[in-house]
Structure formats: C-alpha cells, structure tokens
Length: 134
Image (cartoon, rainbow, N blue to C red; front, side):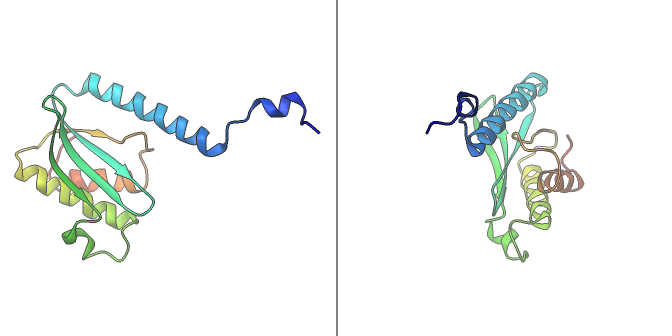
C-alpha cells in the first residue's frame, strides 16, 4: 500500500538536507566576507572527520599563499590524534607562522559554513595568539 500523500511529500533524506543547509550557509558566509574583506587575505578553514586544514588565500590574484593541515609532518608528529581541538590549535599556530613568513599579518577569517566553536574556534584562537590579526 502507498503511504498517505502527506508523508511522501517530504522525501529529502536527512543527509541531503544537512548538506544543502551547509552549502547555503557556506555561500552566505563567503558573500559577507567578500563584501567586508577590503582586499585582505582570507584564512579559509576546512574540517573533516579526521583532519583540519587551513589556507591563506589572496582572492584578488586567485592564489594560495600558505597552507597547513593536521597531515603536515611537523604538526602530525606532536599529536596523538589529528581530529582533536589540540590538532586544530597546532594547525592554527602553523598557518600563522607560515603567514608571517609570507608577510601576511592581517586576514579575514572564513569559517566556511562551519559554526564558530570547537575545532574551528581553536584554530582561530591559536592563529591570533601566534601573530595573525582578524
């Protein structure tokens, strides 16, 4: 037998729905950043279940100036796990160090659609403490 029409109407799976919501949030955040950046370099964050990645991107030249992740040898060697807040702090310090080496001091933070808490916040705080300002 067929399910009532009311129940069949909302057939979007939870995974698809959450991906769609994340993509919409990501677009909204990036639009606001482009509007307010004022020519500053963008510190972009991507987090997966196992790792966290950060890049310093010059949008005017479409060029990546520096990158760091929990997969880097210098970061990974000192960590017990690459998916923790401590790993995010290490990546934040590493990206700030590489940014200062590339003469980047002021950036705009792109959280990439992720909520500003946990690993994303830890990365941002560590980058601030290591010398980047945003």
